[in-house]
Image (tube, rainbow, N blue to C red; front, side):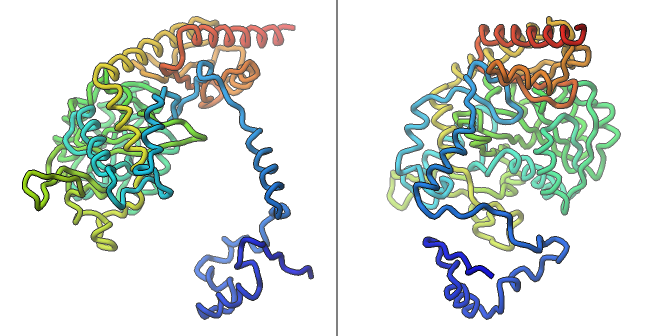
Length: 462
């Protein structure tokens, strides 16, 4: 038996320290802490870990080696989206959120005010104007949580369990929502008619047990839902709510879901001034009208403008704090912990810089370049449009008749420095176009597509 390893910087690796800790809590061994975990779920052996790196310089070298495995893609050659997007971030956004009054070591949570409350109030106000709704929460962890919480709110408001999903949704988001809602709701997925909702099929599932009709616009595949008014009418006629997920980057040119009948609008603010750092940063929003029936079911924090004890002075602070789990603790309607408040400030700075005109120009650019890319790529042999819907930023290519499968095409184009999109299966490729992709970039992608397909065709006939 070898002597136990004692790490110089981890005190509880020393046997004497570990024993003292066990005696302090009255436990015979560490195994007692895992008594509630069934034996068949336990590993039953030590983790297969590499030898520890003791010296600091060894650790630096090891981590440096891991980082060198990362591969950067030129922004113009990146056509991968699927939930995280490479939109342009003005330098002033990073400059402001790195100020000491905003940046903290704990997720940007606003436990005290050094201008943060006002900054978050401004963010909420700007988002409210963009969404054409009155009340917007302090950001949740991500858009997935915002979706799940919005639907949970609908169950509490209506006293019902039924959720009817009528559009394409990101598979990971759907998985998160299912897990979150399983104890309180029953989720029914109604296949769409092409890229949009099948209203007739949805009507068969909307009834007296329905709490919410859930729509994503744009959908996971980038399609815009044109039937929101009909879905809103059907939901409201049954006493249900229309809950719509959207991306705020599109709302400078697309009507807000609230204008088309949505009761609760949710989404992710990653596209509003947040970098796609290794899958982040993400933060979710939930927006509703100034209706107590809706507002009082928001579990997360809200900041508002409040008067003070000094005449003529005002400040910024929590609104209806007593409805939150922070105040109610275990009696809360829903537990919402740490916010992603720093990202809310970043999005607020971004929106303030862009303004209404900037957001409109950006939206028009996204629409135009998405359509240009779709037309250019579908002009190639064997490449077809997967549906006839209106798309913004993302669209799906059908490669059923092409000489390469979608995964093989992705592999081939990566050798040329492109990240051409996400292979949904063997025959479908999800392509993303942002304002970072110029017309020349799209033409270069099409040329690389054509060359890869032509080479594959030659190999087949050789």
